[in-house]
Length: 85
Length: 137
Image 1 (tube, rainbow over the protein chains, first blue to last red):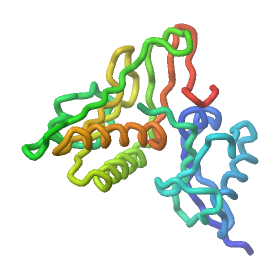
Image 2 (image 1 turned 90 degrees about the vertical axis):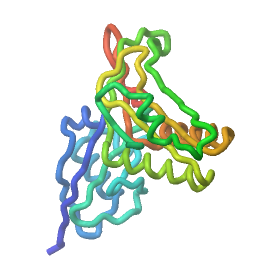
Image 3 (image 1 turned 30 degrees about the vertical axis):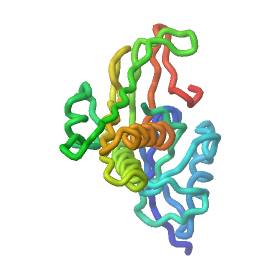
């Protein structure tokens, strides 16, 4: 049996509204990367537009690319184009 | 407090006081405010949302970068959350240094970093609708 892990996913702004939730728990295989998490999210939310232009990811509050391996219990935030200031 | 997110009106004097000191020769301040128009539409207000924990860490990284590039610089960033009316300040960045050139440069650097990399989002609210800036919906 493949062992799994759970991570927490955070949605903000337009992505939060499209997903209809601000956060959720996602179950992934133990060796999953950020890219695998995005693929799972796009299957669950086909209209989310993730991965998509300008959407970045942060793991534990640090910008991360798709190849970064995830670890049980981590926080993955989807960061749509920012507009602070 | 030098780095802050708040749903209350920003306090310019508090921001300046958090970086000022007897060693300073200059304090440069940037104030971002709500513009009442965008792309030909009248803007009533902006509504801000943020990934707060990451924003505060990012503000700290921006300030550290400024201190590395201009040793002795001190930087403060206060940013609004929630609804801001036209004309109201939404962000204040203050940079202090012994000399004005470094204060100007440090302030500019932190403002540009904030615009590019701080996970903060604003929704523009018009008389007949609203849109998340830069996100197409």
